[in-house]
Image (cartoon, rainbow, N blue to C red; front, side, top):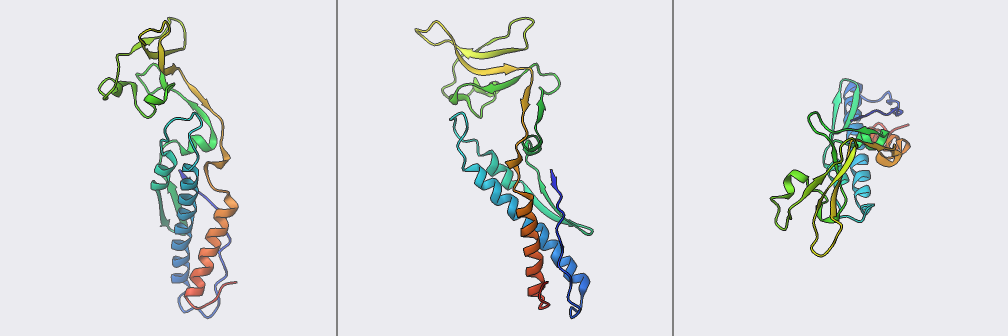
Length: 196
């Protein structure tokens, strides 16, 4: 996911000897400033406990680690490479990959972060069974519990999931713009030309 901002670049003072070098330095500083703002935001979001009370997946920490920045021509670019950030920001529908029948949603904390196909080989893993009634678009993977009539559901199986947009997936654009503008003014101060 590439982030695009509309920031005001400070005017260059006429005393600068190499305006093109100043613009290049400001573009580089702007790209770094966007990256830093994204990384800080994602790390802060990672401190929020899991909504289901499951063990933290550290998804947002991984998003922070995926942030890169670069300059492309006249543009400063920050990119978030972690899958799912766009989905969280814009919302949408997730369906199983080709050849798969369902999405597996953890129903029990003991299986959070584990794919059903990996579970059987895990230490402490128990025998599981699949229940998917003919004609339905949902089911579950469960296990029998000694002394209980009902099975323990480990994963819910669904044909799709619907996600609402989350505007807090990215930092406020105004905060990112302010960071970029500060970085550009800092470049000009460093070059000795001041900043307007």
